[in-house]
Image (tube, rainbow, N blue to C red):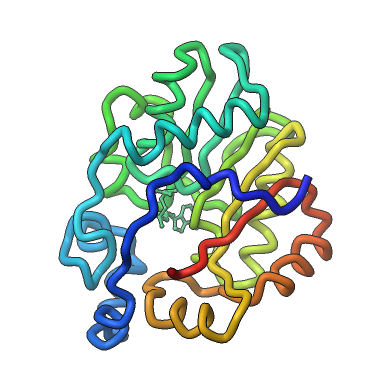
Length: 219
Ligand SMILES: C[S@@+](CC[C@H](N)C(=O)[O-])C[C@H]1O[C@@H](n2cnc3c(N)ncnc32)[C@H](O)[C@@H]1O
């Protein structure tokens, strides 16, 4: 368990970091942080600039997760910060018997989620997951926990660990060099907690997080 890049098959985007850094304002960030229509499907300065399903995003990555964690049609997976359910949809395409669940704070995202998985998604906060202890074989949370303040990040990681039978994978906004730090600060719209990789590792240690993790590095 530990640091591993399980998103190495996720398509790499060419991000207009300097352009966004020059234009984005506190007002854009405030709107983005509401995780509503503007964030997902509004203009690019508020977030995704259109968050649409395409199999090329998650199809190879869910295979990577399935292989690494040896998932079968009898396994269960929770996605914390599931947005419109795209990753869970691709999991179900790969393993139709898989028991999936998703939690997200955004009503907009759930209302516009894929119908194939909508019954498995619910509104919720990562800090208080609405599931019993040891409920899932694998809990995944991609680019979500860092949207909380540090205390809530700790709480969310504890929650992820509590509802997992053991396996978990999270990604966090982070940097390893000064250049990466500057790029992240320009690119970031919603994260409240971002730090150097070694500081995140210390947080994981402090709360006895034993799952896997990797980083969102702005490139
Ligand atoms: C950058 S998006 C990532 C979405 C998806 N995991 C992906 O990788 O495509 C962050 C997601 O976290 C959700 N989110 C933000 N704060 C949250 C919280 N406290 N609890 C649960 N979800 C949250 C947002 O609504 C949004 O869907």
